[in-house]
Amino acid sequence: MTEERERVRQQLTADPRVVPAIVTAVREQVPAYAVLDGSRLHEVRAIAAWALDRLLHLWATDGALTPADLRRFRGIAAARAADGRPVQAVLRAYRVAATTLTDEIAAAGPPLGAADAFALTRMALTTLDTLAEEMATAYTATSEDLAGDRDRALRLLLDDLITGRHASLGALTDRAARLDIQLPDPYCLLVAEPIDRPGPAPTQEAARALLAAVTAPGEPGPATVRGSRLVLLLPAAAAGRAPQALRERGLRGCAISEESLDRIAVAYRLAADALDTAPAHAHHPTRVLTDGDAQVLALLGGRPAATPEHLSRLILGPLARPGHDHLMAALTAYLDTGSANAAARRLGLHPQSLRYRLRRITDLTDRDPRDPWQRLTLDIARTIGH
Image (tube, rainbow, N blue to C red; front, side):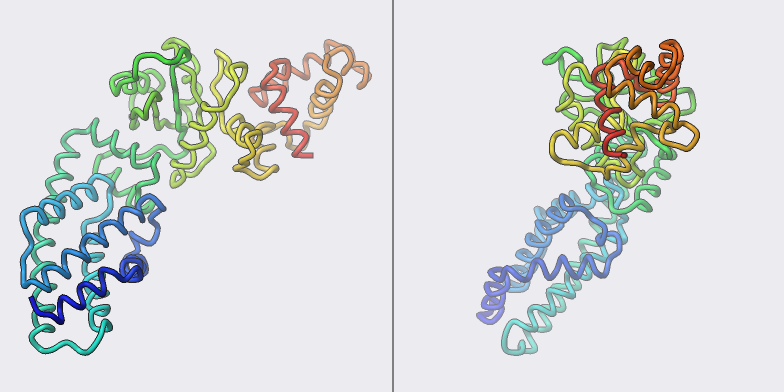
């Protein structure tokens, strides 16, 4: 160990600016890292801090990667294979990080002597060559293992989707293609939980059984378990089969279908928060909570996640379109007066005509104005929409 190298090592490891500079350079130069969310960036920063410490130590001591170092790099490669980040992008990120570290060393003080500069170059090239071989091997082995265990691979895919651990929509599509599946688009994210809680912890087998019950042959999709809940990614057309399947299994749920494929993590948070906060009377045996219910609950909880116009459209649907003014008038009168007879008198209609219009409203919105919870959602939608 030379005194100059040790001085630089201590200076850079103590400098809080260096790790963020490395992460910024990687995000600017490697597109797959530019779109990572907060949870993934935290992981990238942790890896960058560890790699910085190890590389500087190797340089200062003329050392080499240890078996423990290699195991960690293999583990990182395996994790990247599981979350679908391309190995080429990972290796490029390390090259960018090494270049940035070299620049930081050069700026850390007096110019390096020839021996120290040569040692830095040798360490960087040798380390990058070794980790490239180790990581590529581990990445390939993990990819092949995941492809061979299809159920596990699909579960891991959905786990990463609902926690936001995917690099980009393109990487997500590539990962699905390697598993020989096409993610449903449009999709429905169904989150279900036991009606009677607490109860036995749900299992992956229960998730797969529910998936089989709500999907038609040829409509495979991923399913997983998150805590006490089952999570299924379904074709949007399968959502209509969910209420009966849940009812038969003593479950209730929330189905989100209005978020884009790259926002499945947002859809999951909406559904999970809805199940956390929905009152008992919001659950009905013939339906599941939907986007509209989830957005109303978010609004009532003081954390609105949609504009008033979007929320109104989610609840009212076709009812808000031109040509249904007479139905909106019937709904408004019913909500204002609280009874079909009073609403009919206000509009100058026969009570049976008013009740017919209420049935049409239910058909168009899948919400019965006579049900307390659904009446509340309709009232909120027509109020903020107006």
